[in-house]
Length: 339
View 1 (tube, one colour):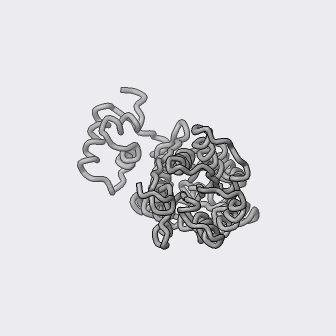
View 2 (cartoon, rainbow, N blue to C red):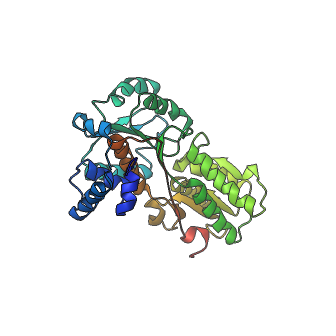
View 3 (tube, rainbow, N blue to C red):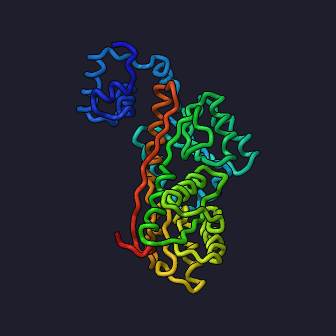
C-alpha cells in the first residue's frame, strides 16, 4: 500500500497517532503488546516512515521549550498555570524530553530570547502559551524559522500553526444556559481580556446562550475583566449598579473576587445573585461558598500539546493540527442548584 500515513496505521491498530510515532522512533515507554501490533501493521502494509524526519533523530537535543510571552503576567499567581505545567512536565518525562522555561517580560526579552528558542541545535520544538494579540509576532517568527511549534490556546491566526485549546465558546454557553434554566433573567458577565481569544470566545458563548433564548444584549451587563481576583472584585462592583440576578465570570479567580464584592454590598449568593465561574481550580471548593463552574481539562491540555509537538518533531506534518478539548459544567452551591 502506498501513501500510508501514521493515522492509517493508528486506525488499523486502534491506538493514537502519537503512539505509532513513538514505536516508529523506538521510544522505550511502550508496552510490548502495543509495540508488536504496531510493527506488525507496518510490516503488513509496507508503511515507510518519513525518512527525512527520522534522519534528524541523532541531531536532536531531546529538549522542548515553553515560552511565556509578556501578556501571560499571571503565570506565577493564577492557579491555572501550575496545573498546565504539571501536564506539560509529566508528558515530557513520559517521552524522555527535557523542558526549558522562557519568561518573556518585555520586547527586549523577546529579542534576546528568540535566537535561542529558534536555534535547532538547542531546542527540538517550542510550546507558546498564547491567545493574545500581542503574542502573534513571536508565533510568526517561529513559523518563519520553520521551528516545530504548538500554541497553548487558540491564536488569532490558525491557518499556519498547530494549537491545543478547550471549547471556550461551548463552555460559556453551557454556563449561561444553566443560569437561564434556573430562572435567572438579568444575567451579566465579567469577560476575560477582550484582546485575547479566550476572552472573546467566552463572551461569544455568553451572548449565544442569551440570544438563542430571546434575551436582548445589554452592554451595561457586560464588563471586561483581567483574570485577577481584584479585577473580578472591581468589575462586579460596576455590574452591581445594574442589579443583575446572575453573573457568568470568565475565570474562577475573578469569580472569587466577584463573590466578595457581592457579599460586601449586602447581597447574598446565590439568593440575590447566582454566580458561575470557569476553570474549576482547587480554590473553587475550599471556601465556605462552593463555586459552580465550568471544568476544563488543564492537565490534559498540557499533555496533548507536548504529544502534538513531539509528533511534529519526529514526523513532520502537511497541515497544522487543531485540537479542541471539551469542558464540563460542575454544579455547586453558588448558583442555587445542586443539579
